[in-house]
Length: 132
Image (cartoon, rainbow, N blue to C red; front, side):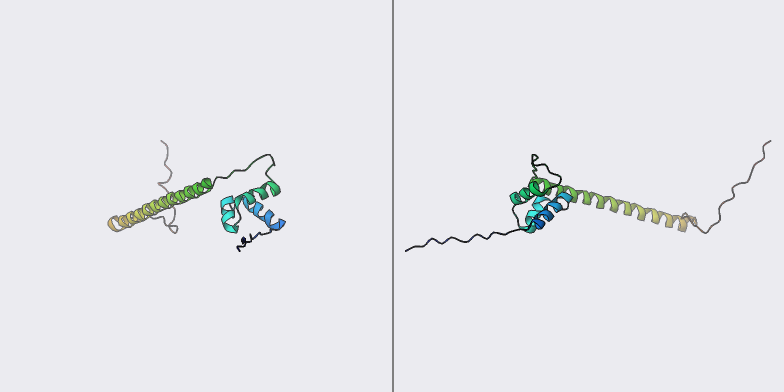
C-alpha cells in the first residue's frame, strides 16, 4: 500500500512593521526590488504587493515595473563611471608629477625657484614714473 506523502510547505509570516520597513527601503532608493528580493529571500511579487499596499508615494492605479536588467545595467553603468573617474584621476596625478619634476629641473638647471614662496616679500614694482 502506497501512501501519499507531500512535503509541508513552510510559510513565513511577516509583521506589518517589517513590510513597511521593506517599502521604506525601496522608496528611499537604498535598495532595488531585486536587491531586496535577494537580501531577504522574498519573491518580488510579494514585495510589489507590499509596495502597493503600504507605499506613501504610489497610487493604487499606478503599476510599478522594475526590470531586473535595469538594475544590473545601472550597476554596470556606475562601475564604468568609476573606472572613467579613476582613469581621469590617474592622468591628473601623472600631470602633477610631471609638472613637479619640471619645476625641480628648472631649479637645478637654471637656479630658478618657480614654486611660490609665501615668506618672500612682495615686489614693489618699478616705482612711479613721472609724466613729461
